[in-house]
Length: 312
Ligand code: G3H
Ligand code: 13P
Ligand code: ZN
Image (cartoon, rainbow, N blue to C red; front, side):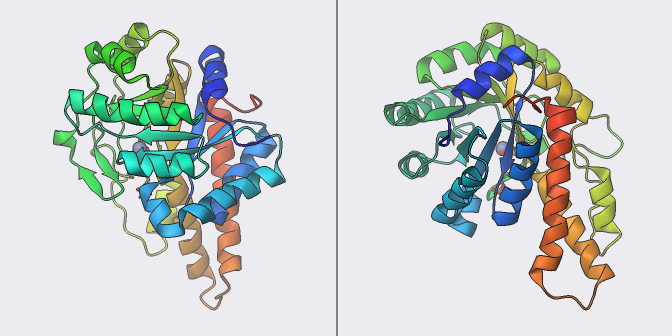
């Protein structure tokens, strides 16, 4: 099976009360860790590439790595998605270069400009058989080189979503309900709580329409501890409680983005390896356990958080 779009995946996820995991990929070990778990758990998957990932690893390397995963697992439904496309040109380059889905992130623009930009990307993408995710509302945290403070972030305004979706023709919509990018999502001592009231109002206004959650890492404390116990310093790293993500996955949320958790697993594992084996210098020796831990983390998400195991 070639790379697929998210259309069928989202239809099944919406009706089945689960979400598809969208995992960011930056190198071979991350692609392998994710797709090995996905293959064993028979889950659909979205592999997503940010502007930063393209700058780091090169567009062609990432496309070929994802295609290699498909060669190894020919029956696996995999979509290749541009994460946080910053402008029309980047989206066009990914559409022309083999992606099956792109996000145009106009969330920092005024409403009408966001619509105008999104509509332009949708027209080009749909002409080329590619689907488009758009965003309304701003998340706090860091994405690529843009940092948004908690004060500058804002929840999606449900009263805007119908007009936005009908005027742009986008295929899915990312909304802001209290998640944020990175490993420091909530102030220590405060109770993390997503705005399910906003989500449910959006859901009612857009029946059958797939919603996307960004910034949905749960920041597993076992990996924060592993990092801190092996030379790292990440005090107060807190993520979204997994029960709340599980709850969201049962609603109109069809795509849940996870990147920071993979980074924590990889970094914690490598830090521990170096402390325990100061004499080792073969990258294969420390990347192997890092890849294995990414695989187990992704398996846990598929089975216990997203609910998409066995849905491929
Ligand atoms: O939302 C951003 C993703 O976590 C990608 O991060 O821009 O550092 O690749 P990146
Ligand atoms: P996290 O930083 O919570 O993993 O979010 C990733 C994301 O939203 C990618 O677009
Ligand atoms: Zn994001």
